[in-house]
Image (cartoon, rainbow, N blue to C red; front, top):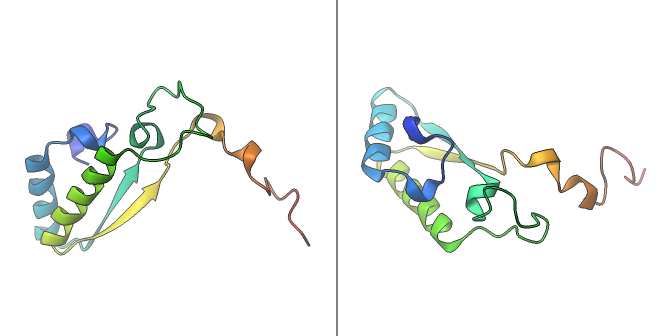
Length: 107
């Protein structure tokens, strides 16, 4: 969302377009929308040049963009499901997780 910029940084979305699309969703009877928080864009690391394990905090401007989309959704009576980190190349955090793929889980 918006439909023409789905896999782009939320920071560059056209908010007039987002407003129109969420208004259309409301008119069609929707009560919830799902929005992906892209790991690379949210951390200003879209090409993964920085180590994703140590560079994992969303930028201030990305958080402000999330706030804006939440405000617009609220105006249209829509709940929002934020889907975090929808993609990370090779699931880079797996090697840093205490229990990966069932191994190391106390029984």
